[in-house]
Amino acid sequence: MAQLFKCYYHRIYVFLFTCKHSDFKGGSNRVLAFGSQFCNIPLIVCLVRFYPNFIMCLPKSHVMKLIASVFFLFLLFPYNSHAQGIKGTYAIKNVKTGMLLRVKDANSKNGTPLVAYDPQNWKCMTWDFQSTGENTYQLKNLFANKTFQPLGEAKDAVIMEEEPLLAHAANQQYEFIKVKKDIYLIKLKATDLYLTPADPKGSTNSAITLAKKKDSPLQQWSIYLQNPTM
Image (tube, rainbow, N blue to C red; front, side, top):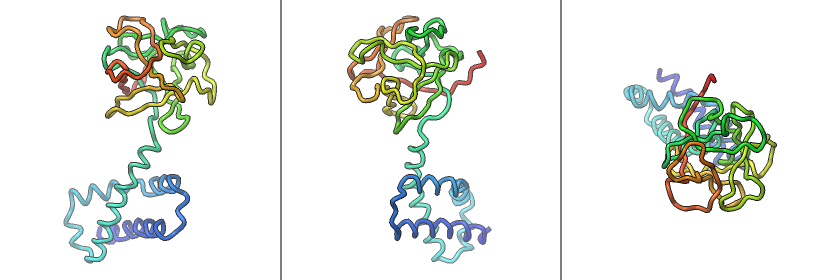
């Protein structure tokens, strides 16, 4: 076991030393490559936690290198996590009302309003997060295979409607601004407008609009994985 870890952390240490003493223009791309190359690094952390006696088999100089390498890895992990972003299919739930985003009546016709609806494990209430940039996504509805955008010009109190998903369309891209774990503000890209239920009480089929920031749970949204069959 000692020989295995000696080989493993030596590769880590060499990588970090190379980064320090080279023109590190690769930035986050290099870090991502590193993350995929050493995808079993969490195993090291687990073994250090649950089997600390293996360290006694290593020379003191090697132990110090291992500690330094693990320390730098903890600094690198946030970049890797951030780059991954949100992936998969999710329900989007309003924190205040408890209602989910849905295209009204599961209608796939262009111009169908985006509304609030009681939580169900349905395709029409599930959204595929398609990354278009840093913390920015287009949201593809699993039932209609479309997205939503403002009805006309993006302005305060405008309602949201279903439209075909167009690559790079600015009015279909949403920034997910983290409030805390799995809770976000959802802002239309390049605006100061946030996804907001029109009815603070969350009545069924009430409209979803854009509004200026209000520092209220009404503009906060939680997400959770959902894989519906209907």
